[in-house]
Length: 148
Image 1 (cartoon, rainbow, N blue to C red):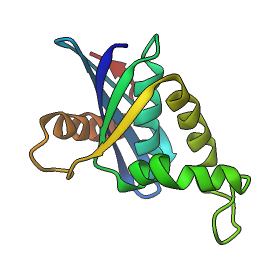
Image 2 (image 1 turned 90 degrees about the horizontal axis):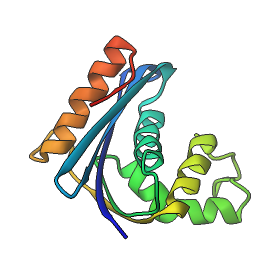
Image 3 (image 1 turned 180 degrees about the vertical axis):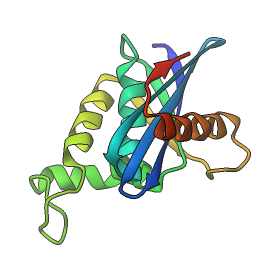
């Protein structure tokens, strides 16, 4: 199984507001950057989109270390999601899970891969996280999508 590193980030101009997401995939000396935007969204939705798009870009099942600066994303996928699924996508306070559509999409992608999740401090010393922040912010401003 190929070992891939996926770094993700989301950005939002206002919350809600114009949003952008970005991710960087690294495998065996190769690097691929992806980014996209939404005209009216939230930062949490963009964090989720970055992970979904990064995992979706992999054409086969891989061992993936996902690196994020979002505790919402990391905690949601590693611990909260099991309870949400058991309770029919309801929270402990019996309210529908926010961003349920994206959590379900992320769950489908995670099932395709062997994932581990790592948290990094945002705007700190992680070069790929800083680059993702730059790309996500640019996408939010420009409202574009791309790959490099």
